[in-house]
Image 1 (cartoon, rainbow, N blue to C red):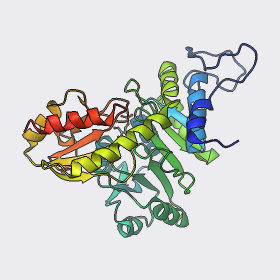
Image 2 (cartoon, rainbow, N blue to C red; image 1 turned 45 degrees about the vertical axis):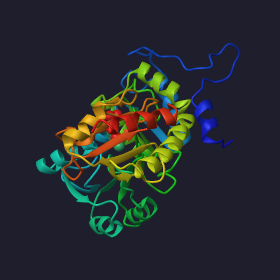
Image 3 (cartoon, rainbow, N blue to C red; image 1 turned 60 degrees about the vertical axis):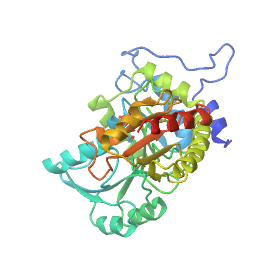
Image 4 (cartoon, helix red, strand yellow; image 1 turned 90 degrees about the horizontal axis):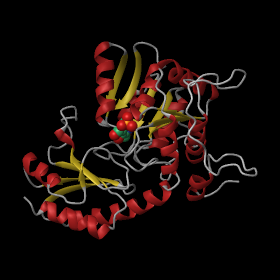
Length: 351
Ligand SMILES: Cc1ncc(COP(=O)(O)O)c(C=O)c1O
């Protein structure tokens, strides 16, 4: 039976119902399994990972593999490409991915064609002869949105693989596998787990052969999650739709308020989701001071937790120079929106 995401998040990945069976999966702490079963060894599989993977698949589609972090999941995708393979990727996105792709391009590991994902014609023009299109949409932290249905359809017409980082939008907003993408990636660290207490990643795919190659990559590179982390992520996932919807509602209200604030020059928001970025009318130091002046909003990197967080992205040397110095990325949490707004206005008054 197909259920609403709120229901799916609560019901998926549970042990089979039988008398005295536990409602929740156990944390399976073992490196070693008795012979004869489908797992074989602790680097190949684990029952707690499987419960989480089943729940992510129920929301996102396909078959899912859990990884030790979002970056580990992303690295697994690139690891299965041949040396020097041409790929198309956004010229603005999560700084960790940008750093990885820049180093791959410099070393010749991959030939990366960097494009402006908002410019659909430019992305399509770069696809000729590519092995993979890597799409992050919306992008971190500028919140650029790619025309996923058009780009995925064109890549498929050309026989090119497509992977989508769905961390910001989540399956509540878009389902890239349903649009025809080959792989959907999540930093499970963010909205899916939602409590800023676990690092994990995932890949989901409808293609059994691709699943096997990615599974082999995880097994032989050893980029596996800990069972307790998988359990924590699944526990967090139970409330993911509730948290996301609440944070999204608050983000929309905050966008409207920020747009009217005299010290804010620009607000970026794709119209959905719980992340927004805004630019402060001030120097980089003053922008930094705003982030340091909040009481409740934590001045910290990361996003997607119940706690509101913000930071000036350019404080990181690896962040792209195309990101404005005065840009603050705000991850809207589950606190009351009036309290978040009171904290923002107090912090902006500090400059
Ligand atoms: C959009 C996006 N993708 C991937 C990652 C990497 O995930 P992780 O930190 O879990 O390795 C991040 C982390 O911030 C992210 O924001």
